[in-house]
Length: 130
Image (cartoon, rainbow, N blue to C red; front, side):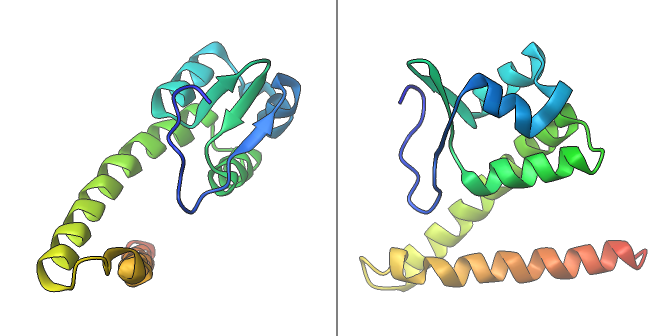
């Protein structure tokens, strides 16, 4: 697969161009395809398109079906990526500094739970106007 590393927890999805269009309807513009390629969400493998993550594909498609433009979903994805990289750095440094070597993979779910809980509480604050 060109341009994609192997994700440890995500399931790549192989698609024809037509199948990808079915996920996003009229939103599969050249600009959106370029943005998805730049983010590493999509790559090509022969005649197939490979999306790096079943979960991201499904959520992106659901957001588009709810009326969110794919360009906005991709822009948000780029911003989330930056925050996720910062969070990953924080937790890797924290865990490597305070746990035994080799524990990082085992403790990874704990870091993910913290991020999930904090995001949930932040969404609650925003929805309450706080």
